[in-house]
Length: 220
Length: 255
Image 1 (cartoon, each protein chain N blue to C red):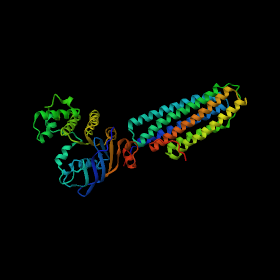
Image 2 (cartoon, chains in turn yellow, brown; image 1 turned 90 degrees about the horizontal axis):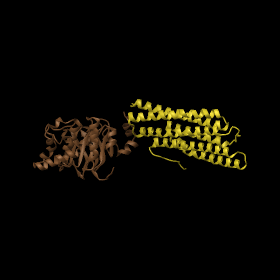
Image 3 (cartoon, rainbow over the protein chains, first blue to last red; image 1 turned 135 degrees about the horizontal axis):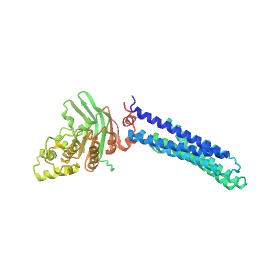
Image 4 (cartoon, rainbow over the protein chains, first blue to last red; image 1 turned 30 degrees about the vertical axis):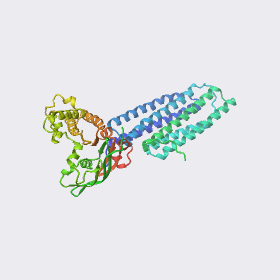
């Protein structure tokens, strides 16, 4: 027989809210990058506004966590789960900020800027989105291996970032892009790289919530 | 928190039976000096029974018998030459429901010393005052020491019982759910008192309140069906218990 059914229900709701918050930021990263690559100012504005929804989720989840701590006085795995959620929402919120930052770059760019296509930026976006998704999945399914995968996946994002840097440098040398545009490209790449770092943090909190200790990257 | 490794009790393969019923099953545990050890577990798991073996209060139950060893300061308390009166002087006890004697506050605290034959008024007065001060009760009762102890509030009565126990200068204080009949303020006072007392005494407390175990104890033992399932540092046991049964119990999913 299981006791504390209300408590269990509250924990389940918390997980659902976290997934929803995660879905919102993933959509915002998508739209943010899309606005940047296609110079779509309207989409950029919408994406910036949608970041408020992410911020709202953070407040709602934080409030629920505090209520649970107050009412249920959780210990052991329950306490770790709640504290991990409180830490994870901070990272997800920061990811949301970076998605908005990418959209802001779109708005800052001159209308006549000619887009310069760098495939690695799209690869970076896909890889960092996948990391967020994996991190949140690993939390819901308590999948330790998947959480470790997220931490190791960051190397992929970092490698793409290095490639973007080289590509941008060479484009500047060859006068293919102007200095302002090069800066924007690098800023966007850096935001994507930071998104990967925040996903790693989420993965680390998942590991903490399962094991009760902090573990970093595994080197085979 | 200063942890010592000096043992107050070394308990080895302790079994306790009520008639044919095994109530404590192969208990192996060391209890450390000047630390607070909490005993937790569901009702009927043996934690109070275990507490009472430590000063042989179970001797009073006719069909109760014990085997195995309880070494207290390296002496076997169940050996035939063990002095039970002296043992209980050194290992005091406080119960769930405050049980002051129906006499004055002063006489309650002086009772044990008088039983020991102390008659010198000055000695008694000094000892009573010290015990009341140590039990954080003196300021509240210093002007009414001759009044009946039964006129005190529940929380004050419980602190009086603690004063009565410590007047005997024990080494160990056993507490069996000492705050379960008290309101939150009186409970907080007793908990503060436990924190103060552990400088001088080894304290073993049975509690059903997990948060209380977390607040007051250095070590926790989790009892289930007469066995110790897990024993260790309180901070460890409540943050990542090693045994899934412990986790189920402390997170309220046991059953």
